[in-house]
Image 1 (cartoon, helix red, strand yellow):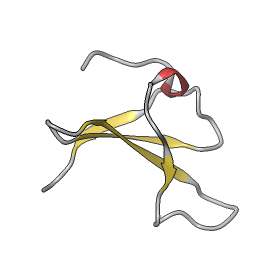
Image 2 (tube, rainbow, N blue to C red):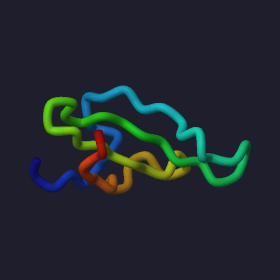
Image 3 (tube, rainbow, N blue to C red):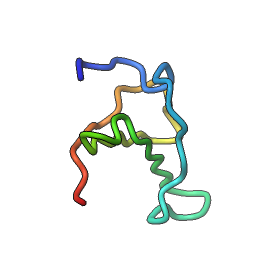
Image 4 (cartoon, one colour):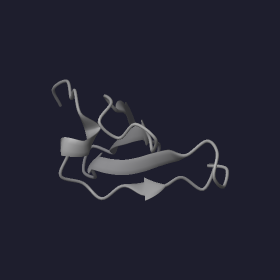
Length: 58
């Protein structure tokens, strides 16, 4: 996957992480490539910011 400047432009469904605190620190997650197990993370307060992408564990 190439570099992504704006996480809001990704054609994925974002969901709130179960580790997020209510009304405070909100992290959103998305699956970018289920076959290669690549996930993206973003701060819900700044959706247009670049996401953090990483492989997931099985």
